[in-house]
Image (tube, rainbow, N blue to C red; front, side, top):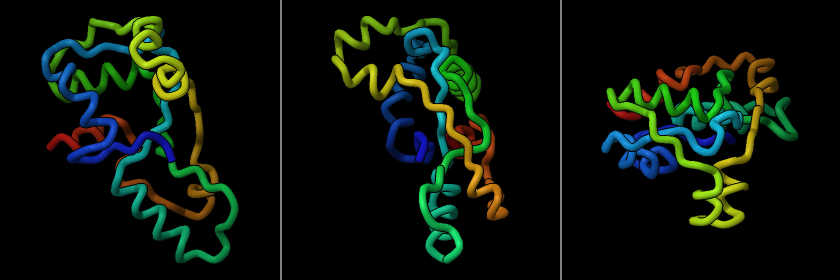
Length: 137
């Protein structure tokens, strides 16, 4: 699964405070790809996979829209009505979090939901903006 976007917790909750304070910004270069999925779509995909005997093996549960960290940052700022001009340099993240920063925040993952698409799955929120607006409403 990609980064799960939903109300009340997860990665989004950890991102919100700096953004709400107007201190949000891209992580590192911002060029790293970020695969994500809306919480409702994750649950619906899990149901589809468990009920469909023809689906087996690895299945990527991610939104069809893959964005860079810079794009995600811009969208989140727009949804919150806050600026996103304060980048967090990669070396600062590595100093604060060590190797975990490289693996979790600076790594690039560009994944597509090919198997879900082939199975006819229709995403409720295929765009990061739609998922963020839903999670924050």
